Each structure stands twice: as structure tokens, then as C-alpha cells.
Image 1: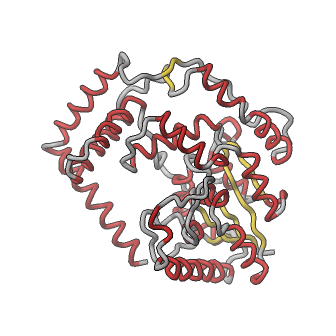
Image 2 (image 1 turned 180 degrees about the vertical axis):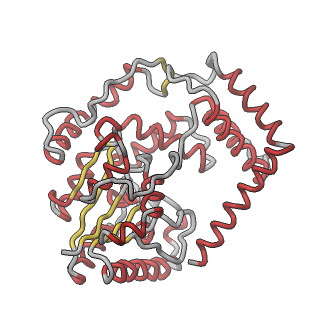
Image 3 (image 1 turned 60 degrees about the vertical axis):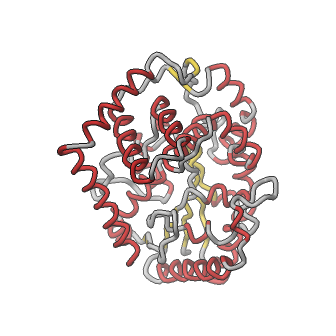
Length: 374
């Protein structure tokens, strides 16, 4: 039977790297009976490799409080566009099934969409699957709740000009979308629609991955094996900022007077500094005791997921909680990191590094332009 594999994240579980992996190996996947179709037109704000974004965009997103996530999402002019994009996306899936028995769709935003969109994307797929005679299997990677939410906040600060502290973000997100971290209830809701046997739960824990590889583990979820015929991305696609550099970025975000081009340049230097500088692993946004207290609220649901979806009697996340102190903005390393960052800004403002920066920007612009024409 033809099968649609829908990889829904969760966010911050190497989804960008897995999307790159699928794209790099699309021709080899085709030889194995799998399609990784690209969707056009490009959806604003969503990279082209997130080929399931037409499902995310199929309806406005609502929070648990019943309010629209974005005020302009209730614009009636958007509904015909959404419907047109949805119909086009589904037609591309049907076209892919004409050549291959299996189709892979992926978008990390689907995790939230499946929890809170009033028009559930999985309902849309289930209705289409009945007409077109294919089954749906959902692949979801779960990351320990504290690590997931910290990484998500980090991403917002890095890419979305967020000015929230981590505590402000945590208070808002758990109030607005409580299921975002209540994995058991969210996974159960998916299982009710497609059957528990079609929900593939994987841990985002390197010690749990097949052969210690996220790519081997993802292929295993598809019923395939990683071998030398598969290409692998050279490095992680979307790394986060270390805590001190995340705070420097947040402070930059607070300054509305910095012109956009200058802010983009400062952000580029900051990401480069974060990748090159020291990591300060002895600090965390939760203290050790706070981590244990926070995770205790999810322990029962996590244990049930391990038992019912993984067939394991034990914790969902077996890794021990590391002993860390709680990070504070005025820490002993902040001066050192700020000095390193400023020196890198100075170096990148002139000479060879300046040309590297502009060449990288030009390269991204060309890629975006080519993608828009696909």
C-alpha cells in the first residue's frame, strides 16, 4: 500500500539537518521507492525544504486560549490563497505517488499545528488518503521538555528578533500552547486519527539513535538502512547560540534604532563568535533542582509514551540530569565573550572577512532566487 510519511518535528530535533539529508539523497531515495517532492510556490518564512508547509499554512493557528496566533490571520483574503496552496500541495503528493510508493513530507511547525489549528492538517490528510488510497504514518522526534523549550527560545532570539527572557518566554508558551510540552496527550491525539501502529515515536537522544546517527535513525523509521550510498550533511544545519551570546543577541533585539542591515551584520558576527567561542557547559537556564521539578510534571506521560509507543519499561529520556549552576547575565565569562565578539566584529568589518560575509549573503540570495523559480 502506498504510504505518506509525515515528519512533524518536534522543532529543535535536527529537522533542518534531516531535510537537507532528504534533499541531498532525493535521487537515491527515488531508487528505493521514496519521493521527496518540492512544493511551489514558496511559502513566505518557510525554507523550500519544509515541503509540508502547505499543510501548516492551510488554516489560521489558534492558541489554547482560543486567540489567533497572529492578528492578521483572520484576514478573509488569505483563505482563498490558503485553499489554493493546499490543493496544489496535495496534487504534488498525488503526482509523487504516481512514480513512487512512498512519499516523505516534513515540517517542524506541524507539531504545533496538529495540536492547535482549528482546521487540523491531519484531518485534511486523512480525508485525502481515503480518496487517493494511501496510508499515513507520522514520525515524531521527542526531546526532553526542558531542553526542547530552551532550544526553542534560543532559536526565537537568534532568528526572530525576540526580546523575551527565557522565563518570560516559558510563562507565555506554556499558557498559550500547553500541549507543546505535554507529549503524551499530543501523541495520543495523533494516534486517534491514524492508529497507534502508524505513529512512529523516536527519542531525540544520541544514545538512543540507531548506530548513534540521526540519519540512520530516521532511515530506520522509514524501514531503510544507512549505507555508503547515502550522502550526509557535513555539519549540523541550525545550531543555537551559547547562553552569553544569546543574551547579547537579545540585547541587540531590544535596540530598535539599529538599521536592519547593520543588525543583520551584527547577528552574523555573533553567530560566528558563538560557534568559535567557549561553551560554558557548567551553566544552564534551569538549575539542577529546577530541572527536576519541571520534568516531574511530565514524568507520568513520558513514561506512558515509552511503554505504549516504544515498548520500553522505563523512562522516555534515560539520560541523567547534569549538575549545573543557573546561568545569570552577569556571569564570570560575559566580559570575555563580549570582548571576543567585539574583536570579531572589528575583524569582519574589513579585509578578507568582510568579503567572505558579502559573498555568503550573495550566495544565500542566489539560492533563494533559484528556489523561487522552481
